[in-house]
Image (cartoon, rainbow, N blue to C red; front, side, top):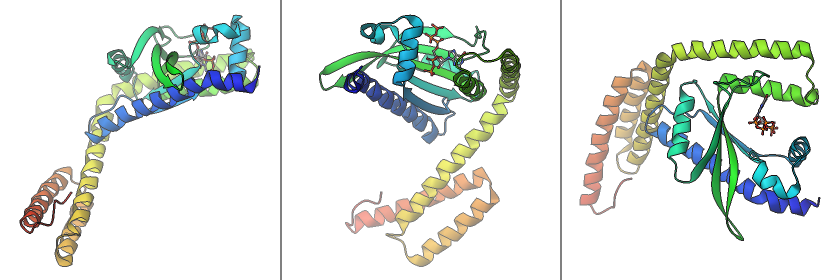
Length: 274
Ligand code: 0O2
């Protein structure tokens, strides 16, 4: 098969991977910037390699003309979650979206594969706009915890090394490791609230600090140097105390100061402070 033929076939899939990963990344950004816990921890994506497509065509007796219909995972998007409880939330998010249509789902968490593989797959239809017009393509979204991902990455490498004939003693170890991941995921779920609380506070603190620094930077254009130095010293003091409430109070006070300068600035007709 000519390289150009593959390129023409796979180009829209490449676009779909880029768009889908950007959309899920952006969702994560929206949650984080609002200080809300996000069930999506990490997003990756890939277009299946030509050699992997050829392997699957051979394994499943698929003709070239049937690739797009019968290969569901040419576009693979992987969403990693911290907790098992996050997985149905992500699945729900996908169902609610208007830009992807759920075709079907594979629940390898409720029904672990004999290899020990656990993951939740959602196969969707997704529209891309190409040079020759719109095109609906299939994409497989794999949703799994960090633990499940760790297991699957290791097992995938071993499958590659042993050309899908992993020796029995290794298979046994992998099954034991898969059971250990189930226990790990359950243990993590049992302390989920505490972990989420800690992470939320960290995110709120990071957002506050970034807003405070932004405000101080804006004041540089308006306030005198002595006042800014004073504000900065106060900020470092509050920051070192590591007390979220004090940081919030400082943020509010700084907002009032910035508002005062903003008003003065408008009075003098110098334009808005951003
Ligand atoms: P790659 O290299 O990731 O592209 P079927 O034979 O019908 O059961 P099908 O159609 O391949 O399988 O669908 P399935 O089982 O949902 O697998 C789709 C993808 O899920 C695989 O793609 C893997 O990425 C992942 N997967 C499924 N089973 C396993 C497993 O036992 N171990 C690991 N590590 N991953 C698995 P590919 O094409 O196999 O591989």
